Image 1 (tube, rainbow, N blue to C red):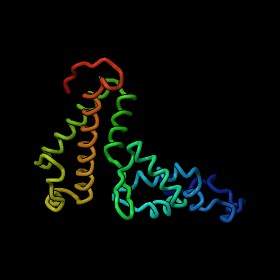
Image 2 (image 1 turned 120 degrees about the vertical axis):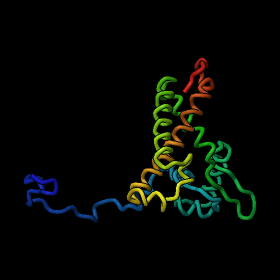
Image 3 (image 1 turned 60 degrees about the vertical axis):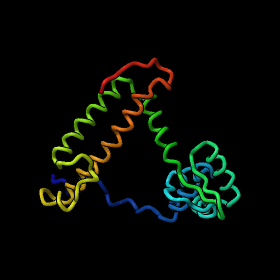
Image 4 (image 1 turned 180 degrees about the vertical axis):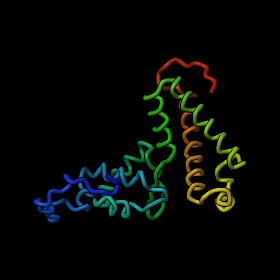
Length: 189
């Protein structure tokens, strides 16, 4: 059997297709659920200061409810409030980075963090040698495409950038491990 062949038992032919009217609409799935969760989903995607009314529209709730939750999120450090008329909010990247670092500390031992960091550094070094650059942003995709397919160059540079972020998070988690309650120790990566 070829990978594109349909198995004989995949569809018997005697079943009727599903009634699409009986299925929940995508809008109801996206806009269903508690308002707080919907607003949190919207807030995590805010990359630029956004008006409260726009956030409320995206979360399918009224403006006053959105304003109350956004003030609460601001107090928790999830968002930055930009005063003015109108007030705007945007995601606080520092909070989300802190959460990622905290999760790494909770889920991995010192040794696991060091091993993952070492692996990431090794891969980064391979990319530095491959592209003869210290940073993926210093590499021209046009120049790299002369040596390999554009898609392959794009993928390699994207992976390199991801490895840089991963290494930064792992190193931060490793250095600040004492804040999670364990005893600090010296670790060389």
